[in-house]
Length: 210
Ligand SMILES: O=C(O)CCC(=O)C(=O)O
Ligand SMILES: [Fe+2]
Image 1 (tube, protein in one colour):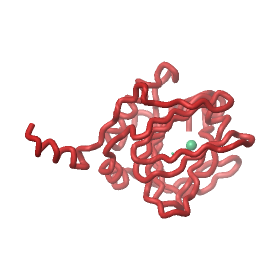
Image 2 (cartoon, rainbow, N blue to C red; image 1 turned 135 degrees about the vertical axis):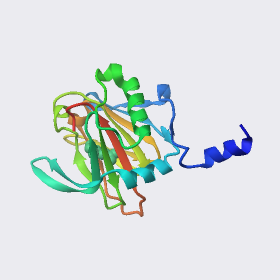
Image 3 (cartoon, rainbow, N blue to C red; image 1 turned 45 degrees about the horizontal axis):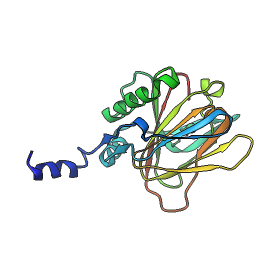
């Protein structure tokens, strides 16, 4: 291929999105109580156009969510893709396939659903919670999060108190919560007072975990 043509292919944001191999590029951090976090920065490369397509094409809706004993408004937009629902972009299907291959032995089942969240700016957020609706409240599970767009903080803290951890996630980063993380730890995306660009997070979960 002509070098000029090749260069223009790489420059074209619509052609750019691709997944790096996972393999041993994933770093695990053991938390307390059998919880763990895997991190793979920059897993999804060149996702600018994918981000713009998802903003335009996903049927976003406002969220209300059960938080402890109440149903509250959550300041962000969401869209849920149930098991077998076609995902809004083939790259997300590819991501699910790669995560299935990487976690299948440990997880014992495939990822089934995809929850998409759209944080329009720093005032959008999600409060401290675990994904405990369904099996995540009683069993170990794995929730894999791919982050697109501007970086936001994902904070984690042990239930019952203790120091929190903060990860800056955007631009194709992968963070995976595993083991007892949903029931022994909580996570949140805090509001940001700094000017903050939009972020989309894609959470892959197993059947019966929300
Ligand atoms: O935006 C994120 O990365 C986290 C989203 C989340 O925790 C949830 O929707 O349950
Ligand atoms: Fe969550």
